[in-house]
Length: 208
Image (cartoon, rainbow, N blue to C red; front, top):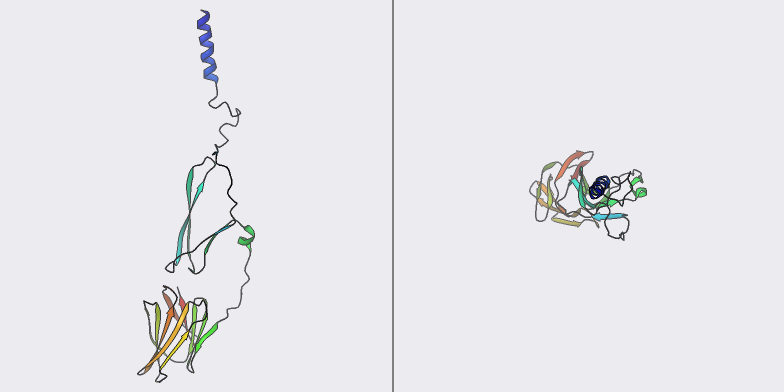
């Protein structure tokens, strides 16, 4: 009889035992398990990534991170913004840098080539063409990537070649004469599409 009573008491103690006796009763489910890896990595300040010259839009960014328990997970963020592939992509936790506002500046165009009847001015991805001559046609060619523009004028200047200034997207301008028109060939530093608009005094080419 005494043995039966001892067994009953033993089983009742087992039923009341906690699943993990190393945590306090009220907080065992609130404390995440952590890995045994020593935290020796530096804090994130800024990381950079560069994209190829064919990149135009960032659709999304996926961040792979490690949790407290050592498991690895992914977080995908939709962006869908246009980008300039010449500039690096930044990942940063420097709030002072992120929140700094850049004051607006007046757009300044730099003259890179000129003849008596046509001039070329550059600002970033824009090429301003100042001329009174009528644009007959324009199109894009590859290898190398270049924009061709034909303007109406009877002239005989032979050939004209001018390299773009340092770090310009427009690397070279070539002009040659034909019967009843002259051809402007604008070589580019990478792969682009473009749009061409009429402006006061000429035309504007914008690389996309």
